Amino acid sequence: MLAASEIGDGAVLDLGIGSGLVAEAVLQALPDAQLFGIDFSNAMLDLARERLSPFGSRVLLRSHDLSDPDAIDLPPLRYKAAFSIQTMHHLSDTEKAAAFAWTAAVIDPGGLVVVIDRVKVDQPLFQDWAVVWRGVDSKTPRTYANHVEELTQAGDRPALLQDQLAWMTAAGLDACCLHLYGNRAVLVGRKPR
Image 1: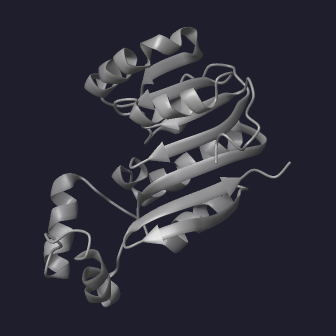
Image 2: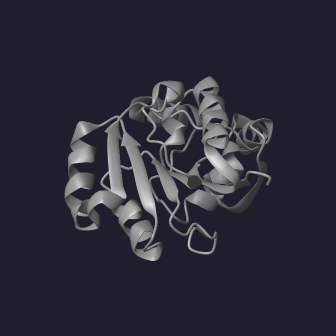
Image 3: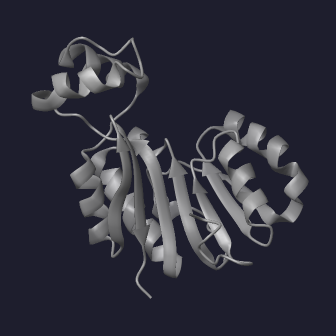
């Protein structure tokens, strides 16, 4: 999606860069683009710096917690796209909404936002989800209480799919879910021109 989005020599935001694995693929696919990545973990940023060192000045990294996006020291670039892979579920719902609003504000008109992350499964549908997800992960919890306990221990706070799409829409993005499997979703937003 990013390669088809006419980013050219613009910049891409990586919100939760981790080890830089996805950023590396993005930079390879977009040979003229710059990438600005943030992560709250200095250990992950060290891994990303090492992995992305061949891209030189095309990469800018900062240590920052996405729970306070307005405080990010954002380099003055033309942001054509932003992506977040398996990061948003660590934020509270209020923080997720704020992160979507901030992202929509900093990308250029026509910009693309891609979020691949967990979505919440509520208790009334837990058993139905578990039937599907056991085909992927045999260690799927047997009860909703076990599921919530696992999420809590991992520091995960996924939000409902419909809530995330509503926050993206409230941020001014045209938004939809392009793919959903179990509790993993590909959410896409496009800032109107």
